[in-house]
Image (tube, rainbow, N blue to C red):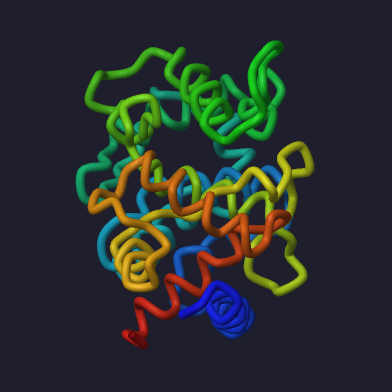
Length: 251
């Protein structure tokens, strides 16, 4: 397809898939059970963290998380103590990881909150790479087992950081289409990347949006450079197009 035709095709597919029906079978349905900003972002962060594998199993584990903290994830975190260990396992994310994440989030909320943890520091370029690194460094300042670090992807090691990028999309993009939440105002939609997974990567290659074979940070940059040419203000909207086309095997 020519550039104009490809843009029109992706714009159409983005609109087709970004609607309330998308939520039904997607992990984002888990944080949609909450209304308070802090409850949504905590639930969304945990859900995004365990978002690998079958979507049905992710949703099932996400529902277990909601059962654990009940009406308010924020209150659960702020009252959390390691003395009251919680049993939770999703694939390689276990109870020790859960304990660390709760303790770290409690510290983060005691120092400005989760959104602020992604702030750009003085002298830094404004981009998602630096935001993720700043957040990661603050998160890992809490005592933890080395094994838990694998659940916080590191862009400086060329990780695609799919789950953190997906979480940022949830928090930053507008809620006007009833999917994303749009509850963070300190990050521009212009900065967002597309969560790079099997579906988005394969379809992006079929559409000649990327040439790299690996799904890594360098490929993130290659893809977002192309997508920003189609919509500089909201390139992450094309996540819905690429994922929808892929999961529904349209091409």
